[in-house]
Image 1 (tube, helix red, strand yellow):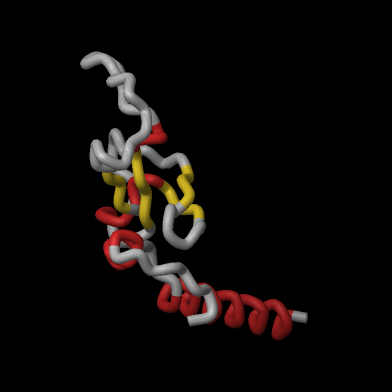
Image 2: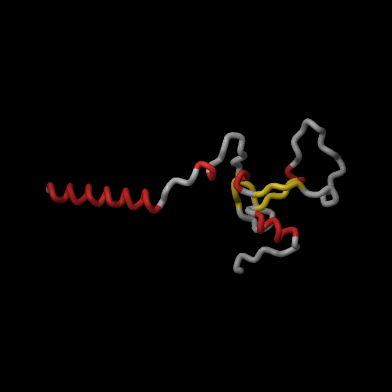
Length: 104
């Protein structure tokens, strides 16, 4: 019985070391900082959902927006005037007029 307990403890210790080595904690720069928006948003190019602080957020040019009412200086911009992308490659592809192909 003592040997079984020792073997289980050894296996547990080896697995603990294995997981610590294989799955280390991400660096603090990858974690959300104070003031970051962590709500999920949908990428306008591929449709994947990602936390807002992890992606690229840009304002649509004035010629693209269809609303004629300008937001007041004290109010936040509406979501209809914002574009969100997973990364800079998706942003460039969107502006180049490419269509997302999930099989490519």
